[in-house]
Structure formats: structure tokens, C-alpha cells
Image (cartoon, rainbow, N blue to C red):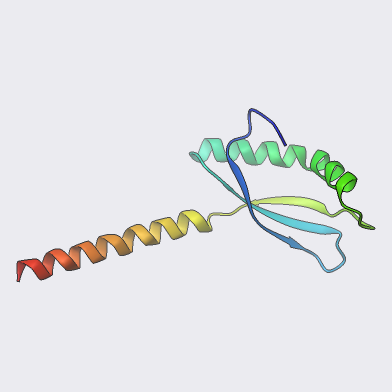
Length: 98
């Protein structure tokens, strides 16, 4: 989907219901909170268009209804990595002082 208002969006996971009627689409979006909110609004508004595009490319009895969710796991992983790096640096600096 090409929309200049849409930020850098990456689909990180899609969970489809057993009956193939619904799909939870998890996306990661680069940017600040306002940019993420705007991109999520655009995705929600474009869901029907994306479903139509999907139906023309995939042969399924039912095209799932798409629901978009912001995936913050990458941000959480980055935050945890930063904490562990700081702990490791502090541990090394304390070892050097002894």
C-alpha cells in the first residue's frame, strides 16, 4: 500500500482465526507516538481496501476481516537491551575500580 501519510510500517505477525474469518495483524511502526497513532488510524481506515487487494491475490473461500494492532515488542526488546548494556557497563566499571 502506497500512502505518503503512512509512516514506516512493518507487519510483524498475523494471527488468523481457525475459521479464516478474522485476522489480527500486528505491526511495528517507526516514529513518535503521534506518528504511530496517525499510521494506525490510516491502517484502520484502509482495512477494507487491503482486504479487497488481498482477495484479488489470494484464493480463499473467505477473506479475513483485518484488525490492526500495534506491536511494541521490538521497542520493549530495545529497552531491555539498553538496560542490560548499562548493567554490563556498570559491572565492568565497578570491576575496574577494585
